[in-house]
Length: 188
Figure 1 (cartoon, rainbow, N blue to C red):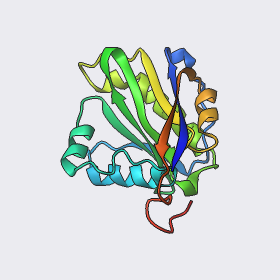
Figure 2: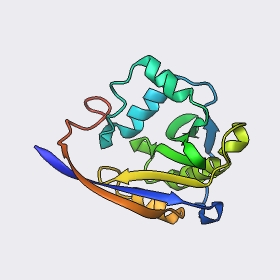
Figure 3: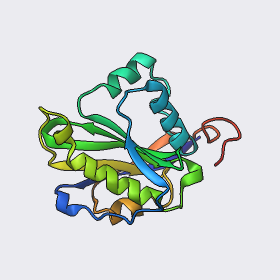
Figure 4: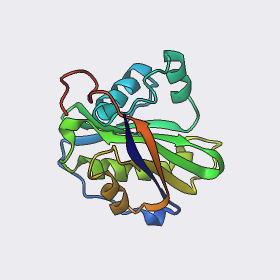
């Protein structure tokens, strides 16, 4: 059995494209995870992506996670509400001043609470100023990401409201995923 998945690629080509969201309550803080931790990154990946079937990194070894997180220009920004991880954004510098927001999302229990727009706004700003924190990187000329029809119902709207524009669409068939969630019985 297979499902049809549409993937949309979006971009900003100038810092002037940014349209920030209002900040949620003072209980939400966004912090860069400055110590590369495969354990923490895998936790964020499964906590945010479990119910929407993120699975491309589940087979990666510890060494592969370390290599990925240790690349120059790779950063993880984590939103916390009252000390609890609520979501994250992973940035990755690429060639010619391009920065991809490789992963972005919220833990299911924190969705729909205005944290996502704020986290995305913050992550986009950090993508635009990434070279300031990484000497030797080309200054950012483009910030891009992709989302798909498996993502939450408000994902695309959030990206468009933050100033991203669509530049590519692909439709593919994928095997139907197994039961959702990072583990059986998780909040969906």
